[in-house]
Amino acid sequence: MSTDPLPAASSSSRFSWGTAIALIVAATLIMGAGWGIRGAFGHSRGAMMPGAMLGATLAVCAMRPDWWRRAAIICFACSIGWGFGGQSSYGLIIGYSNGGTLLNSMWGYGSLWLVGGLYGGIGAAILALVLTRPRSFLEQFVWPLVLMYIGWLAVRHLVELEPYFEWLLGNGEATADAWWHHLDFLRQSILYYEGGEEAQGSIYWLHDTLWLCVAVTVVLNSLLWAAVPKWRNANALIVLLAVGWFAGMFILIKLAGVRMNPHRAETWAGVLGVQVALLGYFLYHRNWAGFMLSCYGFIAGAYGFSMADFVQTLGNAKWGPIGEYAWLREFGYWTVMEQLFGCFMGFGAAVALIRFNRKGLAPPADDTPSRGIDVLSLLFVFGILMIVNFAKAYYGWLKIENMKTVLLTFPIQNWAVPAAIVYLCVLLFVLLRLRRGKLAMVPASPFGRAQLQAFLITILVLNMYLLLARPTWTNLLTFVLAITIGLLIIFTREEKPVEITTATTPPESFSWFPGPVHWLLWILSPALIWGMATISIGFELQRYQIRFPEEIEEPAETEEQETRLKLREPKGSPDNHEVLSGLRSNT
Image 1 (cartoon, rainbow, N blue to C red):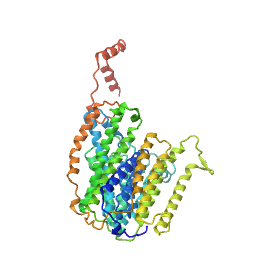
Image 2: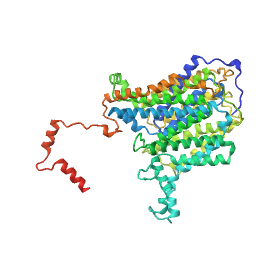
Image 3: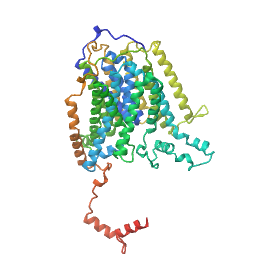
Image 4: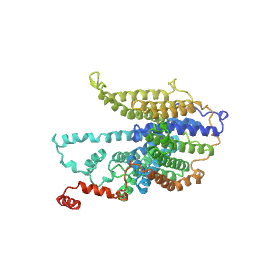
């Protein structure tokens, strides 16, 4: 990346309300559309795409020249940050919220409040690191992140190595009872990574989670901390987050036995541990700006997910105008829920950045000429992130009956990895030329590059959705409209940066501590959850999940039903209680 100087103060302007409104609208719409698209991909890899879209939008529309220069890193940080929450399973808890008893529904809405808060809180916290820490700190993460990803890929393929253990240690025989299968760590790691509930043992509380990846993260970064002193700040933070993940799982799942959605992965506890670790990190360093941004992101995500699910419940119940107007019933309210959730998170992040601009957050120091983190950011967002999400469309194509399965005598599956490697190599070559200033097609100014990045990542994600070949027309309409409006706002921004020469409030200033309105939202949360649950159970929807079976009363049989049962009962048949007792004795 080039090291262009910041624009002169004469071309700067104050942060106006018009700029603030443009930032809010663009971030809200782009994140909403992106999160709706994310629903077609799922998990962390899907959540990273709208995170990248939001980061690119914020970098442009906040109109700060220091953030334009970090646009690639902001995009990367938001993709990683919002990807954390993708570990959490929430399908069942949405079912809990839809009905049953008041306790059942409140448990669902409360769980969504927490899961949504973790999505937004961690995403905003990772963003805060980029906006408040010096470049030298960010550069320390380059090689630890690269080595971590290689380690995760190795763990990902661990389950494929079991046949080699059989061949190497079992002399080629099928040795299901071999001695190495009784080594808890090896055997349970394979079974747990596959999500096998049949493996009961001392670490069953880690069932169906990516705990091996987290363990690799701890070990690898501990070794790097000892071996490479110049990376220690990055290694220490990564280890802190990984240990926070394990602490959350151990305390909440193993010790307290809190199960949000039994029989599903309880990764939310580990993600909560990461959130607490990040807040603790900000408090330890007195980074009140980072603390504020994370809190804003959390409460926006918490309200967003719970209230968006309530809107979905209204849609399923065909409440009011939804039941009256046919065109409103055409929308898939699951996707409406996802888009509203994204809108809330985009809104919360934009509001926090407006406060940064209004109160004059001091620019982070560019204290090193190194630009390795910029190259890694672009390589990840436009390379690895696109490849792992394209895989869903690719494997969907392979299931099409008339699709040709051979290319140049090789099975089509054999082309995937070589094609991905070639693409990454070409992209890396382009990025290295960009870094040397030899790519004329890319704008010279940081603002122009930030605009181009926002356009490319948004269009790529939209096209990734279209490649699935299963678009719903109403969903596609809302996605295209939101993205079009968002991009129009991005492209109509002129290169008139806000004045930052007077922005001298450091991140350590206590003036960044969240105000009373923020904490009022926390206080009102239980009332909101109770109100939504009370209304939801009043709809008496037939499709819902039961979290507390003991709370559900079986309907009493009417006299008419009892009469019918007696008429159907053949003469001389035993009493039901006798049959049940006989079955119990036989078993």
